[in-house]
Length: 485
Picture 1 (cartoon, helix red, strand yellow):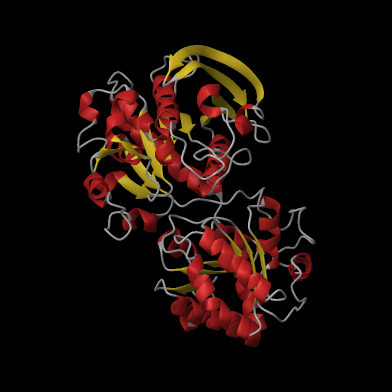
Picture 2: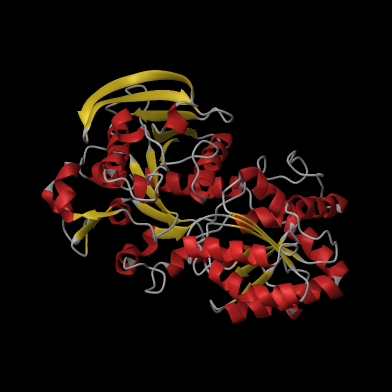
């Protein structure tokens, strides 16, 4: 089974969110199960300068506004997964993020930049660019890669199957309809049954309409995006695909996230021997200049600071947590109003609240290991990875009843505690009051039932969310598509 994964980012080279973690881990898990997997990535500086043994596959020439485009084949560092890199300096070799300039504005030529990514994928699928390797399946990730599905559909002789995974439907790749001519597609693609979306064109819709199968990163999110509440205006398109849409839960990279071997921690620890976790908590309190108290419930947040992630709910519930003696350590960046509000809380309560407005992968490990509980109060959450990391580290997640959070966390109530099934805490309404009530419940269990809390920690650490399980599901999907063809 030859599979080409197409994406805009990959951990550890370029990461803006969980997408990079998936693209970094899933191909390795598929290879371990016998698949022949390669990646296709844009030649962003952090990618092009880091890959190993780069060799030219072919010169493509002038396309999508770039004067020179070259396709190269190389290996990813660390994993040595084979990768095609699109060497197009005019489009990709620049600072900022993959999608935005350093001032936060979207790159004006994003349509061309990510259309090229999909176009190259389709030509690889047609066997045109690398005559030594043609994929059986092209697996495109999120809107950045979605045009691969449209370009493949526009060329009927292409026999490769296509899979499109929605990692976050809220980010759709919307562009002016007047720029359609830049895509080089037949006019039929600029129609309501194709890319047209409210008098604009949508890359996300290209994946939803033209992929042979559509997946999301959790079963619950697959059901949610077919509803007006979570469908972002595309719920009708998703419902129209019927059983072609399914959810496969993301996994955890057990090498990167492993409290037994995580050398960045103050002390490693295991399910059987949890003393190291207490030392991690003390070290985190000291590092973040919080009062060193083993009895204070320490809540962690590792997140983008956006309304989607429900961080305003944390601010609303925070006074009650602090009044009861709890602590908060937060790492993330995002909306300026949220950044400023958390900074203000840290200034007002320096011994109880610590904030770092940045993303620091190493600090994320220390927070998840050192906190007693991790807050993930998202308004919507396709899968969520931080709660999976928290479970693996025995840090009990406090989550909202949405998306992949529903599929991965079991709320601690009388029934689940009695049945020895609880792994975290869950609330329903997206309100500060609902989160506050759940945090009160969390702190009560922490303070009054330490043996039960430790039992939940061990149960959380025993949960199996490996990429091996997800890879098997994807391989079954791929094989079904190839057989059907």
